[in-house]
Amino acid sequence: MSDALPLYADANYTLCRESSELYGEFREVADGRVTAGWELRVPERGPDGSPFQFILVGPTGEHRGAALRLWMEAAGGGVLPPEATVTVESYYKTGSERVTVFEGSYATFSEVADQRAPEAAVAVQRRAEAGEDYVIRVGVSVPEGAPEPDPYADASAFELECVKLWWNETA
Image (cartoon, rainbow, N blue to C red; front, side):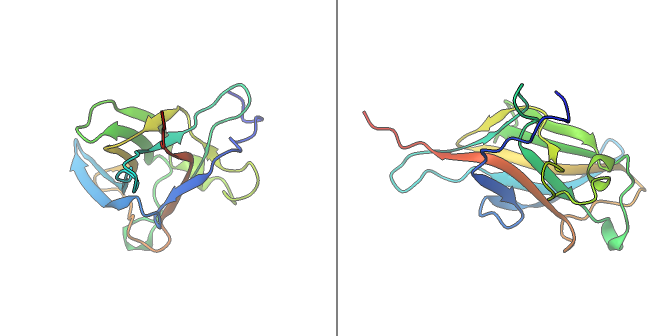
């Protein structure tokens, strides 16, 4: 897909640190890397028992995909190395049905002067549908010893535009 294509324009919801779906921040150390970020959960069923679903819209011939914005400060207020890896995943609560929605370097985000400028945001690379009992994780990974990502820092944030559906079906 070409960067000349517009971002997906019909998102009706933005997942972010302030979303009610935010489950919390995380920090993990494994295989010589430190990964930190945010974990979101698809909400419980609505008042009528109908489930919710998030659609993370990937690229098509008409658009680049939904907007993904990320600002991550390093622990202690430093700057992350540009080669830090950003990963956005969707998966069932058991870890199965994993879809990598975005994977790339942190430099992709830090090189955009104003991620909120029209069409300036980075786009989701692959479509995913997250329903009941699904998790969405936004993580940044660095080698151990490098400045670590700090999702708790005031300057750290993300925005992931999506389509939020409440499946209210009748016969």
